[in-house]
Image (cartoon, rainbow, N blue to C red; front, side):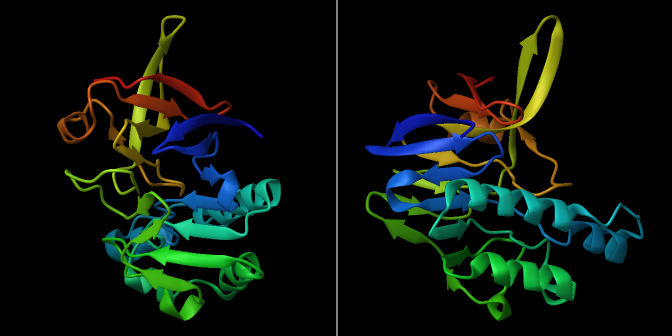
Length: 220
């Protein structure tokens, strides 16, 4: 499995190169910011047409991660849909796909700022979730500890062979772990931004996604 193994809050976790988080002991797969239906929402609000395959791509990669890990529990860390209407207008084929991925698994939707969780799609719907030492929520809280969140779509830049490569990244310090956005067309916030630099401790690590999960000192 292509990932970077690390310990957080005395818990063994794996940051997968896809941007998903794997907790082997709990057989739990966590993903954040799927933003399903983003191309439809952009077309509806702005009139800009993008290839309407972002949700299919995102669900396909999620299906692959579930197949590789054989996860029993899935936690979606909020903003699973790009807005509430996108959750209601998801095409039937994609709705059935989500239902098939849920089959035989405990599926938890954490509430995001873009959507309150697609209630009609089944699963459990929570504001946040605590399992053992870890707490899962959408947006990081400044004073929290042992926290796993999303929301910011962090990206980090690596300079190699005279080139600068920017990739979605996990951000990790002793208090919190912030996941990259799992969905397509999501954009991202640089780890050098003030909000992330202020939120993460000085010794924070960025784990780049892509062909290989690669840990580097968090660029500031």
